Length: 466
Image (cartoon, rainbow, N blue to C red):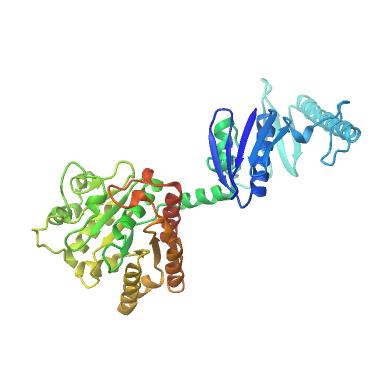
């Protein structure tokens, strides 16, 4: 088969097979890209057992390398195998083969003799004492030839827990073949089963950690005292990653004291209900006859991302402000019906609803963009929690800061903000710019792979101490 490899001056390798399927691999240099192309071609030849013609086009020109079906087993004209340094080692190989055959034959003879002796002994005596692995037992042979062994040294006083387990040995889960990188490309293109890279294994472990369930409910509060700091998108993304990996059971709650925007960024159910509709009905969901399914008339399920949304009031003519008692009531209902609650907050850190959210929180996430005033708002939010002392101060010390880039050129600004927060919080993360996060309904499948990975890694850090 033919494998085309194109390498740019900055070391980006693009592979294309005969079916025109492509895979792009960034490398550190042209030389590194050449080595990577050769490694992949070798892997194809060895795994698929085909001769590979590797055509490499790089800044220095076009190079063609032909790789046999199994380069490690290349042979000379007389049929002897070649070592890696080109020396013929056929004699040694033949000698070893004969040696192994002799050892296997001797072992087979010993096994057959042992089986024959036991059979003859059983036929002569019908019931006889035998010793196996140092344990004395009684073996009997029925008329139909079936054999039974009774352990004469068995101790009936041993607890059942001492019984052997026959499950663990056969329950080891093998690693699924690679799906990402050039390994995944080879698996798709040639139906191979190459193991995943260390980077893919790490990513799988992150996703696995997101799927965990805990005893009881956990509450995450997302905050920043400045508006437009990406609090709502952060709340949605955290809830989405937890729900997708963990099989639902996650509520994203817009805890703005009045008007919120979560309803603008998520899908709408067949009703217009908000938290203000749930408040008067909440107490009946605390009774013994309450049904979780009835909550569907108050929340908005996200079909693709598997989480539910409790919207804040969106009517500008409504003057009701959610009180602290109402937050307590709704949180009690939510904690009985969802395994995780991610709460979006308003811009005020002085309202009753904000204070009660902090009291219920197990973890806080401080959201910000790469705008300096939003980063300053994040800093002010942390200082406000520290000033409260007690539980709030502890949350501030264990906070996770998530910085979302406003545009592709903000990588350095994002790193500067992260460096500033790193000494005072538990963890920091940068989410690269993605047009899917700017406006409109947010869904996981709309995000770029790098963005999705960044959110998964950040979410894993958020829940790592639950």
